[in-house]
Every structure is written in C-alpha cells, then in structure tokens.
Length: 169
Image (cartoon, rainbow, N blue to C red; front, side):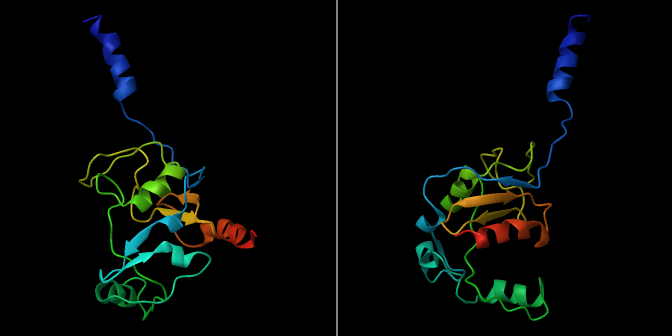
C-alpha cells in the first residue's frame, strides 16, 4: 500500500481535475494559401461558388427557404433580411470536416487549453471548433487574422480588429 500511494498521487495530479484557461481571442499565424482558394455549395445546393469571386468585396444577396425564414422570423427575427450569400451547412471537425475549416484552424490556435465535446464525431482534436459561436476573422488577402472563443458575443469585442483590418491598405 505504501508504494501504491505515491502512484495514486501522481495519477491524480496528471489525470485529476483540470482547469482550462480560456483566451477570448488569438491572433492567427502563417498559413499556406488563402480563403479564396476554396468553394462552397449554396444553401439550396444548386451551385458551387468559388470564393475567388468575393476577393475584395462584400457578399451579394441571395436567399434560401429554411435558413432564410429562420433568420427573418426567429434569430435575429423582426423581419431581418440577409443581403449576403448563404452557404450550405458543412462539418467543421472530424473526418468529414470541410477543407475551409481545416485551413482556418491551421493558422489559428485554439482559444482554450482544454477541449471536450458532447458531439459525436471523430477524431476529436485539440484545436477543433468548440461551438457554433466560435468566430474567425479573415483579412482582405484571405488569411485568417483572429480566432475568437465562443464566449465572445456581439460586435463590440471584434470592432478593434475589424477597424484595424479596414484601415489597413
């Protein structure tokens, strides 16, 4: 028993409760390529759009029944009308993750020191997108600039970075 006690103490220290450290924002590092090398299917699946056509622009308007009505009547609601292209849902983690998210995650560190998920996909990796409110800000050249933890909500915490990118020449 006296030999077992030190092993249990080490195991408790290594395996025991962990305290994750959340960072609200992480600046991204270098990546190969840019966002404009990718494409995505529109929400209704009728076409594949190359992101190259968005280089240096804001997205043009297009609608889709189910998600459009959700935006208009539920969240944010109040008759909200999106004037941007809506894309089809894709996997952001696991074996079937869309290459766009592999690219974004490759340049941006995870905003937490711990990762757990009640979602069912594999493989689970530290650095996976934690929740659907996690955000990536991409600069004009298509490079990921900043990654934000899901706890960052609203526009205010992003405004400094957005203004910095808008003022960059």
